Length: 185
Image (tube, rainbow, N blue to C red):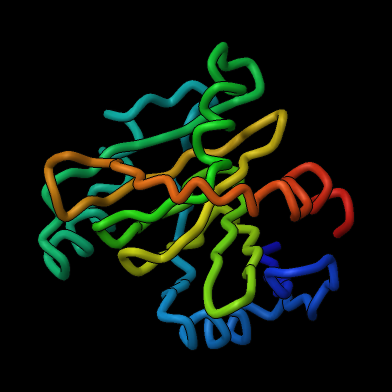
């Protein structure tokens, strides 16, 4: 279930946790983040590659392309058996920003976005069917857990694709990681 927990960025005090999707979307819109529920009902095999995923969701991709003019679309996904899962996890766990706004459509599994905005950390568990759009230059990080399982379609307005500008802030270490967060739900 899509879940949002809001923390103060200083200290360990846990704020309120939301599980009502419209309430989560409304709360996030207050910090410029768009969250929508899309249909992710195309059958995909566990090992479905980029071409298969993009073909299955061609209609949804074209809808977003018409609206935003994306120059690059790709698929990122991991499963617990991926040999580079630990390296990839560490890369996304560091707080960073993007000059481009970040758009992700979860077509399988889930992952945890942490949005560091206005003295708070918004911890958002995204699930299959969630479409998230994070504004450019928003500090954030992402965790997929020690046994990741997710597939996301990523959209970019530049041909360079994913380019992270790391802040050097080690704030991510102060908050529950994916495994601890999901175990507490």
